[in-house]
Structure formats: structure tokens, C-alpha cells
Amino acid sequence: MKTVSCLILALALVGCGKVEKAEPGARALDFPHADEARLDALLAQYAPYKMTYDASALPPKEKMLLKKLVAASKLINQLYLQQTSKAGVAFSETLSKDPENPTNAKLLTLLRRNAMPYDQLQDNETFVGDTPYYGGGELYPHGMTQAQFDAHFQQQTPEVQAEWMYPYTVIQKDGDGYKAVRYHEVFKPYVDEIAKLLREAADLAENASFEHYLRLKADALQTDNYFDADVAWIDVSGNKYEICIGPFETYSDKIKGVKAKYESFVEVVDQEESARLDIYTKYLQAMEQNLPIPDEYKSNVDKLTAKFVIVQGIHRGGEAIAGYQAVAANLPNDERVHAKKGTVKTFWKEMFTARFDTVIKPVSERLLDKEQLQHLNSDGFFQFVLMHEICHAVGPRAVKVGPKKGMATNAAIGPAYNALEEAKADIAGLMSLDWLMKEGVVDASREKEFYVNYLGSLFRSARFGIGQAHGRAAVMSLHYLMDQGSISYNAESKRFSIVFGKFADGVRSLSRELLLLLGNGDGAKVDVFFEKWVQSSPQLEAALKTVIDLPTDVLPSYEINWGDE
Image (cartoon, rainbow, N blue to C red; front, top):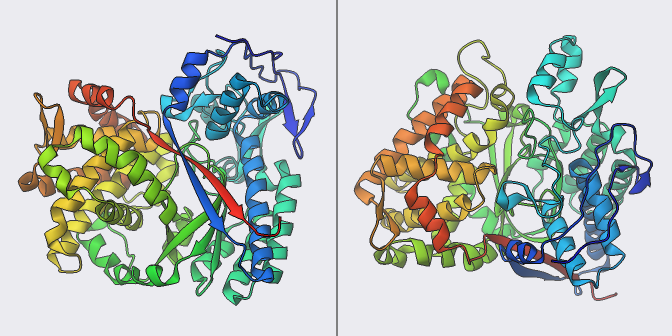
């Protein structure tokens, strides 16, 4: 064990990375020791994977456009760190003064991967020091609980309450009380510079729809009103390059489950492959009608745009590069945009390859029935993920019955929503895939391939732990489907298999349970359901021990060859 020389950090960071004197009552983080063996064990969870893009032959104007987008993405990363752990930022700065120190180098890698001194694959356990993890990050006063939030919230006017629940506000101390402050005010130096870069990129854009989107996104970042920009993003077409940028996901808000974190993806669009997926757009309403729930729980998605974009990512920033590494996304998350326009469903080719090769395949080869391994392949995995993203768009997006009717499902349910929604997308996706095969849209001879790849990906997600939305969803689904007889376990071989004759029925049953929970909007009932099925089991414990030496997720390293540097 080595000791890391570091004073107690009681720091409040404001502006562009400037460290100022801590305010009274600011949280202090103490990092007295770093256990070398534990650092090595945590680093072994990640499979390093280099993502290289050659931009050297691009025309000068296109190259400059991409450079502006990448610069904006890098700033988003800094902004995200301010949202997540200011003390972690300060600790990184301290370690960076001596990056050649082997222990410092390990800690820096873990800090960059997790954006805080807590490992996201270990249910946010600290990897240095003993300060407990706080689920509000820097978006709530440190230590504020959900009950405390609710108590103060009830005392506010409806207008103030709306700001407190707005996805883009920070809850701050205000004398003896609290106030909600918009992101663009709290993070103004970052936001203004990012907006400037996007406008400069718009000046270089040759695609009119992409230029329009960039200008609206710049405006949105400086007002925290994203509706027009999000609609314009869905309308972008024919563009060579893409940037998904802004505060989107609410996974890490463990207090109310509504505060969004900044992230960014800079991408090169594969226009030909993207166009091949457009066929799914016309089946959205039919998939909605196929859901096994009463009509009052169903939605009208017939006029929504299901835009599919296959891309090569060349840079990730913010929540996109920290923690869970997405292979696909269904954004934006604004229910108003969903209702009027739809979403953009993005698939990252480089991350699909990395995840399947380094995680899905090795884990599946140890845990899946040997006879079913013949059905394992990256194309089957892609089809499952494709249906997952499509089916984020189906099912209740607002509460359909009861006293919370009309309220957005995530706001009504709270922090438990994220795991519920991820599980719903998985299971409704599988059920919709079954329907598409019966309709002849998808090749039915590949049924076993699709289901086996789902099972392999299920174990990949379960290894994230139940504190993470995808991990919690996976553990719940595994146990439920085993109870239904849809997935079997061989105690002798310690391997799992799909029971093909019962799998579709189990999926339909679970789909109904999840969709009704969403439509009812009762967070307490969601908690009860997950507590029932997210219990430890001997089979899962044995499985996780079997693959403990394998990487759990990808550790990407994005590099761009500009050719002029």
C-alpha cells in the first residue's frame, strides 16, 4: 500500500476550473490512502480499447468544422465534472502534478473513467478515502435527502416548484432556505464558450439543416430551453457529421431522478447504413398496439419520427465517456419533443465492435449453454439493441391513470424510473421483435440468434451492479424470466440457456408488468416490484464469480489524426 500525499480537500470550484476558498459548510473529502491491490482490481474491470479516426485527408473546411465540435465536446466534459464531483476535480488536479507516479496514474485513470472518486461498476464504492458517496452530486446541497427536498418543495409556489423539478436547475442553499438556479447561470463560463464554438461550427457547415440545428443548440445552452433545438435535431438530414450535445440523461440523480447531466458525442454519419433502418419507422404504431396492456395505457406514436443514425464516434465527453459506455441512445428525453416529433436513435459502430469483442463474447462463452453458443454473433446483438432503442418510444411516456395522470413518468416515479425504463425497452423490444418476425419484417429463422444474444448481454449488464440502472434492470429481468421458466440454469455445468418454447410467453408477461408500472406512475409500487426480483440468487452469484476475471466494460481512448499537427 502506498500513501498519496494529499491534504483534506474542502474545495468549491467555480468558473472555468478556478479553485476558490471553500464556503462555510462545504463538504470535505479526505483521501489519505490508496490501496494498490484494490486499484489494480478495479482497473481490471475495464478493457482498454483505442478508437482512432483519420481526419488527415478531409477538406480544410470540414476539418475545421470537426475541430470546433471536438473542442465543444471537451468543454462539455469539464462542465460535467463540475456537476458531478468538484472535490474529485481538485483531486485530479493534485494528482496531475505528478502523473508519472504509478499510483497517481492509476487513480487518474479511475477518476477519468468514473468522473468522481467512486467506482460506478461497484455501486459507487469509494476507491480512495472513506467519504460516503452522495447521490445528489453537485446538483443538490450535499446531504440533502429526497424527504428533505420534498418537505421544502411543498412550501413553494407552483411556479417555483416547476423550477425545482426542471431538469436543468441546480438546487442551492439560499440563506435559511433553498433556491433553484438554471444551469446556464451556474455554469455560465463553460456554456458561453461552448455556444460560441457551436456558432463558429455553424458558420462552416455546408448542410443547411445541420447549421440551423447548431445555432439553435447554442441558443438552448444559454437559456436551458431545448425544445426548438431538439426538434431541429430530429429534422437534420443529409449531414456528413453529427454532434449530440447537452444535458440529457438523469441516471445519476439519486435524489429526485430528474436532473440531467451534460454529455456529448461527435460523430461521422454512415448515411447508407442509416437509411436501411428507416423501414422500422412505419411499424411504430403497430408495435404500440401489440403491447399487452389495456387501450387506456397506449399512446399514439403514428406521426412520430423514428430517425435512425448509424455513426462512427470520434469523441465523447461528459457522461458519455464516464461510467456506462453506450452503444446506442434514444434522445432527446423531453416528453414534449417525443409527443410532437419523436427521437433520434443513434448507434455507434466503434462501440458495438468493442463491446461485443471484449465483453459480450467472452462472458457468454463462459455462462451460456454450449449448444446455444452457435447462435452468438454481433449481428444478433445489434438487432437486440436496435429494438431496445426503438421501444424506448413505445409504452406510457406520461402517467395514464390515477391522481398523477398526465404527469411525465420519470417525474412521477422518481429515481426508480431509470431502471424500469431500461427494463421496459429491453422486454418490449423483444416482444416487438417477436411481432416483426411473425409479420415477416425480420427474418424469423434468426429467432434463436436474437434471444441468445439478449441473454449474453443480460449478464454483461448485471455485472454493473444493482446500483446502476442497466444492472438493476438486468438482474430483475433474469430472475423474473427464470421464475417463468423462460430461462433455465444447469447446476452441473453452471450455465444458462433460453427455453425457446417458453421464452416469448415470459417476455410478454414481464412486458405487461413493466408497462403497467409505467402507466400507473406509482414509485412505491415500482420499488416493491424491483425489491422482489432484485434479490440475490445462488445461480447469479455463481455466474458472477465465474467471470470475475473478465472485463466488465470498455475503457475507450479516442484519438484523431488531423494530419496537420
